[in-house]
Image 1 (cartoon, rainbow, N blue to C red):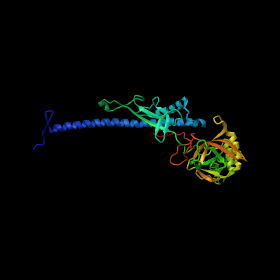
Image 2 (image 1 turned 90 degrees about the horizontal axis):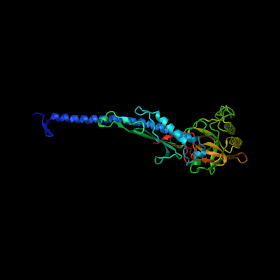
Image 3 (image 1 turned 60 degrees about the horizontal axis):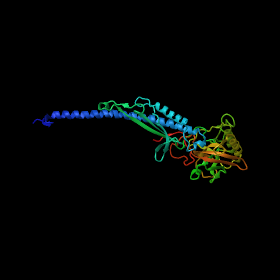
Image 4 (image 1 turned 90 degrees about the vertical axis):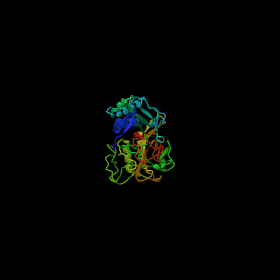
Length: 394
């Protein structure tokens, strides 16, 4: 018996071989169509990834310019939550973003950012939302495009057969400033006293007055003297004192004492002290317990040298970046202790014996030249300064 049979299509008789040919033709047509769209969609996805790189780079560069602008402001302006970015600041930030974006390409086209696509705003870490504003922004949002708005849409390879000759592609990135809790460059902490992290556990509030002396008073501020990383086994000359003062020391491994502390303070006053970078959770400073009465005269001299009049508070102040050390209660802190973070404060009173007073106010919403934290740990709460280095958050 023959395997060939006939069927009717639109009233005409076709044999089995004819039906198979039609079916194969239809299937091949669909496959060609799918392949064509797959190639063009793949090209669009690659282009979008390239646009994402441009948007990420632009957001980070613009965010860094925003952070550096804040870092250069006086503390009072840094803390002003109603302060608008000036026109010059906005222009600098936009230019930084546009320059970084143009260094990237998508579908072989350098990416220009359309007007208004470098946006200033605030980023809410809890709701993960961006709200446009030029009033004390902490984030930058950038959209990179290949469409009719900027850089032109990308062409298609095969979709033109079906009347689709171009495709619009875009990508958006948000970079935000957050707490400083990572490494600092050399010389950032500039005060020879620190605060115990215990003081930040439900005690410290924005603007609170800190008394660094007496050093073990929980109600006024858990604090202690330190001489940075200087040790005394090779003498009392600080090894990080450069170019005068008590410089050229050879350090050692003999811990801390008042003579080394006093020499460090003298070197700071001379403008010659530059301690190495600090890595919270790793770097240890040498602390000296007790009042250390002999340190007050050189500290008073340092204060009188570096203080500046603050018209907003109506008093002379010394702006300090204070290391926050690992919790040890408020007992006398001695020996090597790990630094876990930073705080900013304005020292406004230093008195030698018989009073032996160091008074300052904790500053919130200020910046320190430190990286964002890389993981758990570090000091949280209102006393943590802000890093000028942004992170991608969206």
